[in-house]
Image (tube, rainbow, N blue to C red; front, side, top):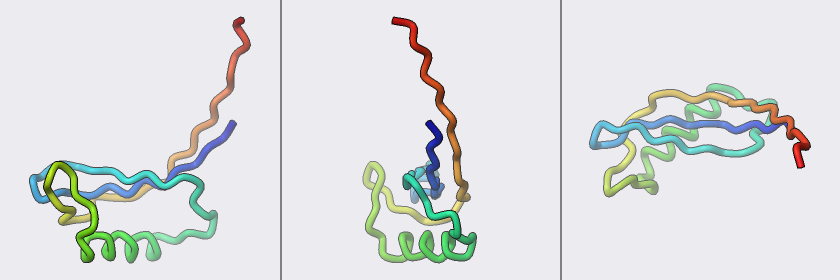
Length: 73
């Protein structure tokens, strides 16, 4: 089974990294759209990690996994 996740990687106010994973991103997604969304997330200050808010963008990526189950039972 192949799965895709969009990973949005943020810097927090305490200097830590925090990642939001979004399953099944659309194939036509652009870097500009992702950057705009990430800036909106930071600007609206809606997500907090251990009491700290997102303060910057560290990166974004689409991660594709191909998992093959083995029948061992």
